[in-house]
Image (cartoon, rainbow, N blue to C red):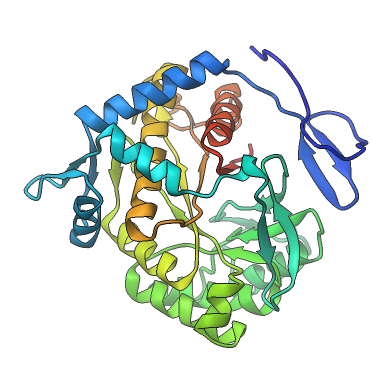
Length: 346
């Protein structure tokens, strides 16, 4: 149930529906599904999960950082329990968007293309489609390197899209180097913020070096970073070792991560909205604590593409109504923490 619909932008607006527009800017109007009391209850329950159950982090580097930050680390099991005072400490060290802060988004030439504040809405492509409907022949086929180039060019020409998250995979290149080839295709054809598939630290190092070369060096890239990175928990309450190690590499290079959940409620997490939100929010909190253990003052964001699990078809329908509810509720939790939010579309 939608409880209210308020907009927060200060500038004169036009437009209808979920978004309001100003000159070259788009703002959310503030759909909500949680009351202030419910937001606090979700937060409190998430802190209880992290204190009593914890999360799995198998990375030795991550374990060292989290232990030094004040967490209880079990080296044998990889389970890390996070006291509430550590969570509070981490949240206090994250710069808050509602405090008037805005985060500039740079293109690969170092120009500011937009600024993200507490209410600004931007668009991105995504999907990593494994099949491609050729726009010229109508053939349904595997996507290629050229298709990565073409989709990057198309998105670059669309002012509403500021972030290219890999839309199709390059199935015609050597699989061990697929991500490297895709990264080159995006860099050559998309000038704005970019995100690519993550594979392993060795490949991620090559991706970072390519972007640093385009920026004119590591310092230039760190100062005006034009890349995003996703730290995706494995629900329930686990993190991939490679992704944790790549998050360390990314933050050290100037790339700020989004802790992005993909729970299938009823399969990899609780079936209820409140239960699923509690677990995914705990995952996001653990990810935010991890970013501060790496570097105090790092600016993470959170996000979700969580949905229900269809037990008849054994799939997770991204277009389900519950997907929208999880997205809106996660946006409210992000606003509560003062960080940015990414939500998947249907």
